[in-house]
Image (cartoon, rainbow, N blue to C red; front, side, top):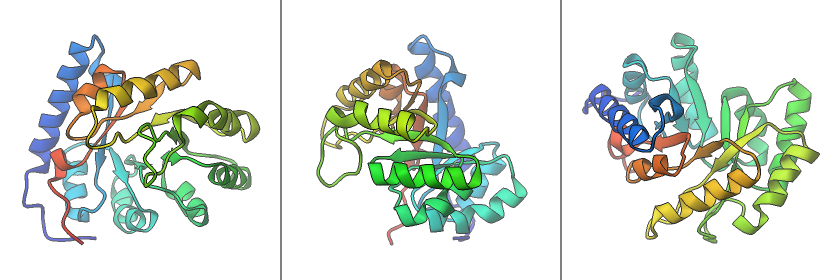
Length: 229
């Protein structure tokens, strides 16, 4: 994944996004450090991720286990304090590799995956922090637990499997008002006593912060458009 040096100013883009994040947090009566910026480096060359790390950023999001391993094992050798979030769907046959690589898995969305995570956690004696993904738009092509099933699934993860669920994640439909989905996710989190809310991307992260996002996942505004594959 090492490509040519970045042709955009990743450090400047990061500074802009962080300033916007801080301003949105202040406007919502929150502190800037209440919101974690997950820089979404999925699909970008390692050179762009490295530029962000060298600019001082340390929290990144990747979609695929194999791509993340190829990109981040060398980077983490140089920057061991970098933290990785898995923000793409996780297949059960990739659980062992994912748990070895990622600090946070944001896409727990089905009983079979929860059981696999619990089994690997028992084997190695630890588990990354987990977010349950909720399909707030109930889109058939998207991963995530339907909102009506979220409470029962959260209970399964926490009570049956003893998994460290710290929050919820959503990806609103692109053609709908995101605020409605952020409010729904916040309500589900509130009634389940979960503090973490991973919501908001490049186009709507300021709205997400207004609705209580603790983690925002921003890629394009930092790294530019992903190259076509």
